[in-house]
Image (cartoon, helix red, strand yellow):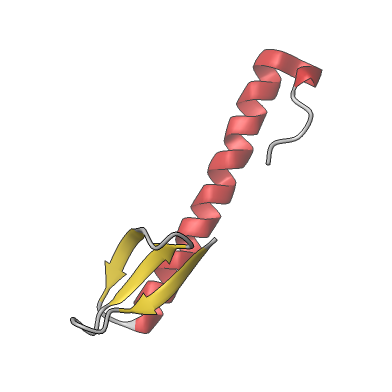
Length: 66
């Protein structure tokens, strides 16, 4: 879903989507890797929270979030 790539011009590391959109920039690979991992964790937590809130409102009408 996201990956870390090194910017050839600056030498910095970009966290990007598969479509190439930049989500964040870091000076080191370990910092960029951690940022990417934490962004993925936050995304998963946000989806779970949204599904739970929708289920509270709509019950069994929510089958499965994707």
